[in-house]
Each structure stands twice: as structure tokens, then as C-alpha cells.
Amino acid sequence: MTNSPAGIVLSISDSEALQESLQFGGLEHSTSSNANDSFGAALAQLYHERFRSLFRYLDRLSGDAQLAADVAQEAFFRLFQRGSMPDEPAAWLVTVASNLLRDDRRRVGRRLRLLEAASGGVPTASPAADPAAAADREERRALVRAALVRLGERDREALLLRHAGYSYREIAGALGLAEASVGTILLRAGALFRSAYEEMHGAPD
Amino acid sequence: MHPTEMTHPSEATLLAVAQGQPPVEDAVQILTHLRACEPCEVRVFELIRQEREIAALLAELDHPMPARSVTEIFRKGRAREVRRGILAAGIATLCAVGAAAAALPASPVHQWIRRRLLSPEARQAPAPRPARPAAAPDAAAGISLPAPMTLAVVLRQPQTSGVVDITLVDGGEITLRSRGGSVAYGLETGRIVVENRLPALEYDVEVPVGMERFTLRVNDRIVFEKDGDQVRAARPADRARHYRLSLHEQTR
Image (cartoon, rainbow over all chains, first blue to last red; front, side, top):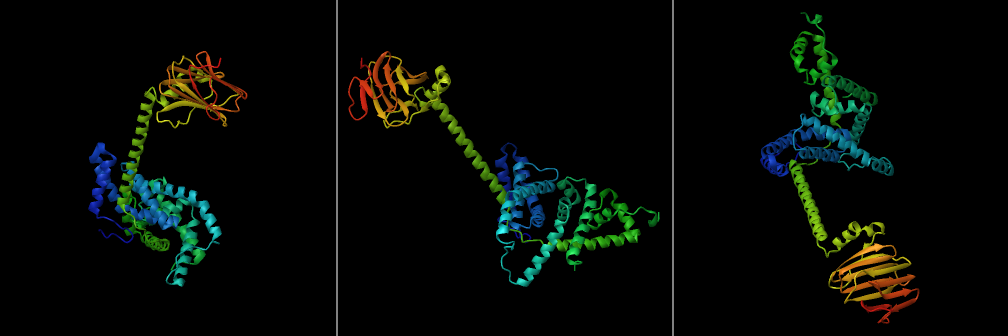
């Protein structure tokens, strides 16, 4: 078993994963086994390199780690079904994952609102070892989230993508922007975010 | 050229430098400028500090990453392929069975197609439904339809043998079944015509008691007739509401 960075759990070794990807790649597209073998290998490589950043972006955007992991996994599965690599795989994955997330929000939005109303808006978190520390953390999270909400959707997504490790080129591809305009958007998004947070909390420590 | 005479990079460009994403085509010129221009260099360090603050704040939102594996994707893909294969095989089997059933002249499917698609009379008549199979061991074919007030069942060709079981029932549907031979049914105005060129050996007819008038004819001979509550048949009922008649018998 391979010990990867915390959070990523590989149930088999990299070489086994690669073997499996080749096998299933051949099953999916038996007429062009060499091309599909290399596609399976490229997909496995991309997964190991980019799953974490995609999860990080989706987790911060949605606030739901399980949903973020599921959506990231589904985006990679859609790439597997596609059968070939797009020009900008990381941007393609973000676009697909963002659409999946929007679909999910539309689907469950009403149910969540009803649940929140029924629970009186009290967050349903698991009990922490240190309630005071947990409360502080929750307060900081709420402030950060409130500051993010003040940004426009595109600015928020650009800021979160950049801080999840995406390049300007990938951000442009994912959000349908000109690469030259990404810096301007990030500059504005960062300034708005900081000022919104400071307005609610004071300057960051 | 002195730094003060140079055009300063834009804030967005300085941010790109702070984030390690300077425009490739201008990278050398920008870095040269920064070495010579203290205000721009200071601004880059300020932007780096601000980026670190933002990164620390955003990290507050992070949760531990749930366990996921790339092998799940390949397994899911394989499972979907298997399901598609099973579905395709099932559809192909159904098509093959349906085609075989339609090709066999004695099969109910074949007869249904003849009635529904090939018979010109059937195109004008209400659609008959296949009758429920009788409990007999050999295959039965037939039709069932809501009983009109008046109806005649006419076997087109004379029968030299065979029997018909006629039962008066309480329901609202008239049902006609045949066993053995190969007959087809056609609906015409006020009558069901049985094409019995290969005559069946037995017929079952269920006639609703509520029908005003019902007649069973073989060629031009009347074998059974119900007119209101009156029944005319060559033999009396052998049990309640049940008549078993030879097909060459007649009432008059």
C-alpha cells in the first residue's frame, strides 16, 4: 500500500492501480488498446496529481467534504467515460465538477432549507473534544464564509481555484476567461475578500 | 534606461509575480524591473504577505479529505459496462423470441398480428384483446372483448367434427377460444368471423347473461341462440348455464 499525503487513501499500490487502469481501459475500448492503455495510465496519473486540489476547491466552495469528494470522484469518472484527455484536463475537471455541484445544490436546496428550518438553524456538528476551541473555529469559518459570500460568483471561484493550486491558465479555462484577465480578477477578489473579512472581524492576525 | 523612466508593471502583473505566475513572454523584463525598482519590489512583498493571509483564512474552511481511490473509478466503469451488456443481451433475446413467436403460424402473436395488421375488417373494428389462456393442457388461442347487446359468432367453413362449450357468465366480456387446428378471428359489424379452414377441435365461448341476443353459427347453420332469457340449443344445459354441443348440430 502506498502512503500518500493525508486524506488520500489508495487501496492498492500505484503499479496495481496502473495495471487495473490498463485492464479496464482495454475493456472499455477494445479496438484501440494501445491508445486506451495510455489513456488509463494518464488518467491514473492525473488522479494522483490533481484529485486533492479539486477536492480542496470543492470543499471550500461547498462546505461539505463528503459532497466535495463525491463530486470530484464523479468528475474523474466522467473523464474516464469520455475516453480521451481534453486539452486542459484540470480545467475540464473543474468545469464538470462545478456543474455537478450546481445540479446537486438545485436538487437538494429545498430539502436543506427545510432541514435547517426544522432544526432552528443549529449546525449539526459532531461534539468536539474542546468545545471552546471548536466554537472559535466555527466562528472563524463562519466569518470567512460570510466574506466569501460577498464576492461575486466568478471572483469567488477564481480566488478559491487559485488558492487550491490552479494556474492562471487553468483558471481561465475552467471559468471561460481570457488568461490575461485572471490577474485582474484575482486582485479584485483578494482585496474584496480581505476588506470584507476585516470589516466583520478586524485585521487578520 | 533608469528604472524611474520605465513603465511600472500593473498591480495585476505584480500579483502574478507574487503568486509565481508572471506572464511568460514578459517575465525577464518584469524581473529586471523589480530588481531596479524598489517601490515595485516592496509592493510585491506586500502582495505576498496578503496572499499568505488569504491562504490562512481560506484554510479555516478545510475539512479532512474522505478516502477515495482511483480504482473505484475503473471498477465503476466496468460495472456499468457489464450492466449495459446484460441489458443489450436481454433486449436481443426479447427481440429474437418475439420474432420467432411472430413467425410461427399457430402462435398467438402471429394470429394477433394477422388480426390487427393484416385483416381489413380488423382495421375498422374495436381492438380485441387476447383471451386469458384456458386451463387446457394444449395451447388455446382466442379473443375477448366487451360484449355488445347483439353479437353473432360465425365459423366461416362447415365443421365435420368438433364441439363447442358455451357458458353463460355474469361478466361483461364475451370470450372465444379454440384448441387444436389453426383459426383466425376477424371482427365485422355485429359479428366475430372465425376463419376455420384448418378447423379447431374444440371451442369455448363465454357469453354474458346480460347480452340481449347471441348467435353461434357454423357456415349458415345456427348451433346456439340466446334471445333475452330464452336459449335455443340442440341439447339442454348439461350443468348450470353450460352447454356442450356438436358443431354439426342445429336448433332449426
